[in-house]
Image (cartoon, rainbow, N blue to C red; front, side, top):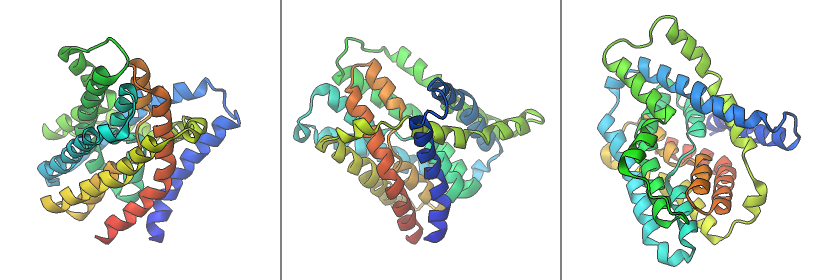
Length: 307
């Protein structure tokens, strides 16, 4: 237990530091959007590409990981749809609850995997990113188009084009392609991307902390509480059950379950604002999820380790 806490606490300490730096105005407010952009388009893609390009993908139970991860998303989506009449929220708010049920914060996921599960766990998490990013983006856009307060209904080709341009997804796909064809990490470029990728986790986690909105968190109501329990407790429980049923090895199971236990991504707020979702509720969900995850993820890691 002490080893798990020692591995995870620095990850969450960086999130808290990011929040403190933002509140204290240690850096100008203009710094944080640039840091997020750098992380999203440069450093995290470099980390994902370099990791997947050199990974031993042949040793991974790809079908089992895909079944557990995508099965978790499918079940969570069906559950939130099933309880819609009970929630008694506006359609726009419900579209935000759908996002809160399925969208993970990839930055935290990769940091936790790197700290706790090593190279193999990071590779499994990168595979989860490749599977989950397009899936949750499609579901989230459809939810906002259907329930959001807007007149925009994206066409299929437009939707697929937007998903396909996601830099995290592109990095995973290109890295896997280099791996499959036997090229791996190219000389010079490969070491360059590995060094660049090392900046991804600290910058990304600081940006996560800087984006926390405690004012929005104080306005959280019962729907946000239900969302928090669903994303941080029920989702990893479903993932654990599927992993056991599919016979995944311990490290692979830990990576999948921890990925399923991640708080909601900040990108959900952008989509809610652009497509007529309940943006204030989305900000509340993201902040409450992140703060609760500081306590819940170590507990889940301990439970998974004990299985």
